[in-house]
Amino acid sequence: MSTLWGGGFAESPDALLWAFTVDTADRRLIFDDLHGSWAHVGMLGEQGIVTDEEAAQLQAGILEIVDEAEAGDFVFLDTDEDVHSATERRLIELVGDVGRKVHTGRSRNDQIALDLRLYLARSGSLQLQRLASLATVLVDQAERVGDVVVPSYTHLQQAQAVPLAHHLLAYAEMVRRDAERLQAAIYRTQVSPLGAGASGGSSLPLDPAISARLLGWSWHFTNSMDAVGSRDFVAEYVFVCAQSMVHLSRLSEEIVLWATSEFGWVSFPDSFTTGSSAMPQKKNPDVAELVRGRSAGVIGDLTAIMSLQKGLPLTYNRDLQEDKRIVFHADDVLAGSLQTLAAMLATAVFNPPAPNPEVTALDMAEILVGRGVAFRTAHEAVGRLLRNLGEDGRTLEEANAADLITAHELFEAGDIDRLDPVASVEHRVTPGGGSYREVVKQIKRLRSLLEDIRN
Image (cartoon, rainbow, N blue to C red; front, top):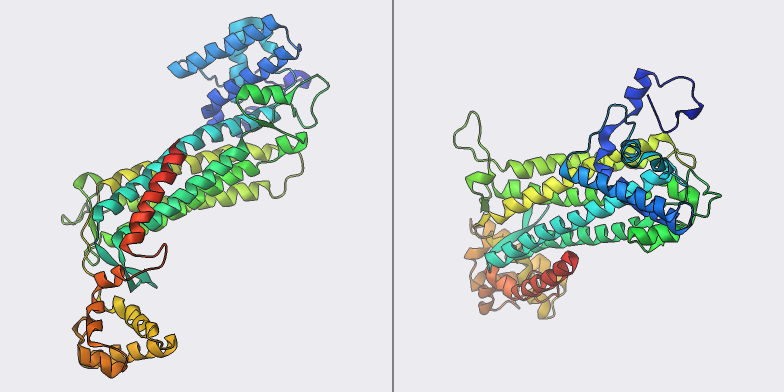
């Protein structure tokens, strides 16, 4: 069995060692590995470390492997220890002994650090589009529901009246921030480690700036040990995935609640619900439940990637092989959740019942505050009004002018009109608050920001 490191070994790896140490998860990095090798060879050629002819042969062979991989014709062998050994083996098969020069001035340590950076930048760009798509669905639905008013909740108790659009846009804001965090993470990821070698660089005249330029990046490492021994860029990416999944889980929890007969806020077509094997009447929002459940695994991924790094001395240690399975899982779960939840929400039909009348209680207190009454006194007066009505078996909606004036002498007969939840929304003036006017502003702002993210 041939390995990239076996020259000093008299024996081949034991089958148990091979089975335990080889991980095929990195095969998805094949395009990133080839991209990195192409840039590395270009640098070797520009620096005269290999001849122009050799560089051209190597790059042509690398591009041929890219074609094979794109066509699904690239064959991994059981004897390939990892994606690096597989592509190098195939390159030597295609171009002969000159292929043995591809690893000049390079270690698998800086090679895998680069592959991961390339993968996360590439996959992160796709995730940005998915995040923007979900946020756009939420904005579209906010626009579609128009002036519908619902209760906001604190402690899962009805609190103030708000436009349903305001509630949906709150999640759009969360998803937008997730996209912005991911943009920043991608920016910090695009730093080339090529030239760092195993840990301390090389005596060959490598030029990391050339490698970075050929990769299409502006930055390269400034400390070779940090370049190959650090995985904070992976942890940051996993954090963005975990935070995004937490936001999706919160949204999913609300979808589950809203779809119950008790809430009755939303319904979905048969194509986005599942049934029960026992109860014919059931239509379950399983997509939301699965997103909520799978968020737990991505939170676990964040714990795993942080724990993986906590006791490692510099520089590279084989523990870091485990980072790929962690980040791939987080990345895949987020991708599937974003795509499916966005498709489900696009089909949602909202028809929530009116809020309870008591959601206007704060408005009544603020009427008195506007007439010079201390807020705490106004709060007590409205509380007394609610207590008196409750003792009579009535709700706030059923109050009359006499009830208001009994609660506080500064109430006026016309204040009865403010007991309407729609009126509550219409009188809201706080910038960013739950008024129709602010909803229109939010929609316009979000559409502009999401367009920037897409571009």
